[in-house]
Amino acid sequence: MNKLMVVAGFALIAFGVFYMPFSRFAAWDLYLEAAASMIFIAGALFFEKDEDFIDEDEE
Picture (tube, rainbow, N blue to C red):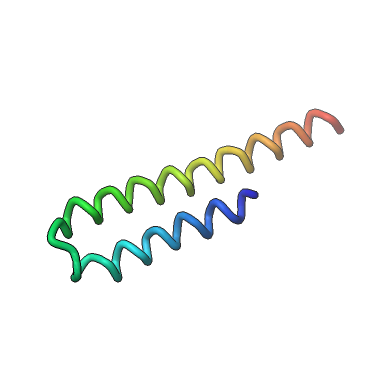
């Protein structure tokens, strides 16, 4: 699940970069894409650390 969220975040970045030249609202779309991708990536990293922390406690 975490790797899927990271891949989705980078896919949003790629989509924003390739879609930008064709959009009338290029800067606004790119800001939204970047914000969404950062949320995906940060969420994936947070949950990954949380799972590692839980695994360490169980040992």
